[in-house]
Length: 404
Image 1: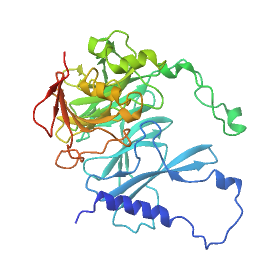
Image 2: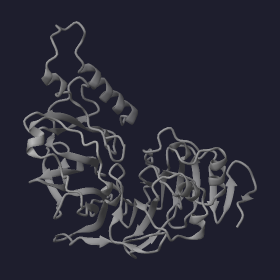
Image 3: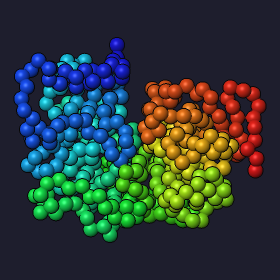
Image 4: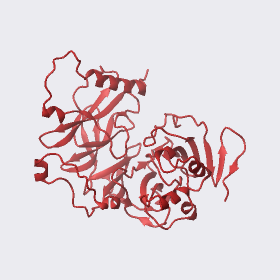
């Protein structure tokens, strides 16, 4: 019988518990080195998603452990890969140690892709989950900040940062010598950060020359060679499993926009609440036609989108579509302006059909994946269809119009 994902997570938790010393062991005084040598699971400060990854066949667990390196004054990341059936009390040796992030399994459950520092530059690598053998897939002229790869591993979209005017690239050597420092003053350029997206494909002779992806703003209709973002919210590019479409989230500061966006409740909040004047939007980019659409016209998206296995639809946590009846309901219930206003939506990419899967989410920053049959795990209870201003309760006959 194939082990379940719940059993996999239980085994990992048991391993952590067994690693804690018992109270019966001999005590000693705490030294300064103890305070800076605490090992913990790496956490994702940008997307807030779990870094524990279970292979598609549920046979293995991969998890990164953060370990302070006193010699370099930085954290090393130790990558562990374990079989679910192994003794949870013995984690074994790390498969890989270095500057590791954005780890994910490939479809064959035998390899992992990740961002790794190689010769001082962050690249996309594929690592054999059993032997640790490494292969560089994509190297850019600068650090790769984010990436997404299709199911067959033959198409990769990646993001690189544009240079900013902020000269604070890190602490100077004399600052490091005086100890850890926290920069409390943040440059105003934090809202001017931009990333460029590129796509490359595997051919018989290697990877093709990267092509730029130019997103068209669904608000101003202007082309965007680079996409604005804030430091703790990345673009989160998500390639469809078939490698033909890309979903990406970015900050749109456009002042020109269609009327349905301008008259939305979120726009009214944005104009009166003294907050940053932006929409945090999700767009769909067709890699063949090089065309941008907005299948879910939400003013603020919370999670990365998760594709279905057939690449025809996706789920995402977001605010209600602009100027919809659902948005008006959220205004009446005072849900606009905080994470409590996030809904879980199912979206059909080709038609723009939108269904509400869940009206409330306890943690909207991470969406559960689809199961093997291509359906999302939560049942479609209380879902509602929103097309062309129509809201249709799934559990009752009839429909109610939102008006023109």
